[in-house]
Length: 258
Image (cartoon, rainbow, N blue to C red):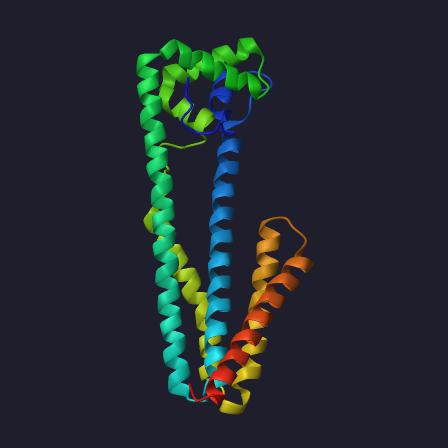
């Protein structure tokens, strides 16, 4: 029996559909749901990456603005923060997703060994999992046999592990998406602080950042089917606090001549 990963709610729909029996899940609907879930996860990651870019860069440039009114200093600090943040996000995402991909590959390799060494035990295990999804024992056995005959490794990967062997997580895609999302978010406070006249820099930046954070909060709430009001307030409030703290710190350091 497999014990290498926690049991997850996989996708038995393809095999059940092949059996063509009442109560079987539709394979197209199951695949569509899985694809939609993946797209929503990417969208959430993009929104969160952009949100991080807005908050961190806004805090940085507002802090510098508290210490100096030099446009070149603001631009230098903002660009440095943008590049450092986006590279950090990309590297962190690459390492994280690479680890996940390695785990998926190891799980598939172990499952392949178990199927070669104990095919009957694996068939019984698959049957039990399908029963747990609501199929009758007879139908579960028939579906398990059909799935095993068609592609045993894929059947166990999808039902037992929740992994599609043909669509393992890609660390390069994740890193690129994080880099772009953070960069997009960071550009807003950077442009808001360097483009307006000196007297309008802070008001324009604060308004632009709070509006962007409110939008990110609303988007993340909608993607997660959560109440939007509280998410917007939390997001905008956190950004406002970050800018206030860094501005005070920059002002004090500037006044002290540091």
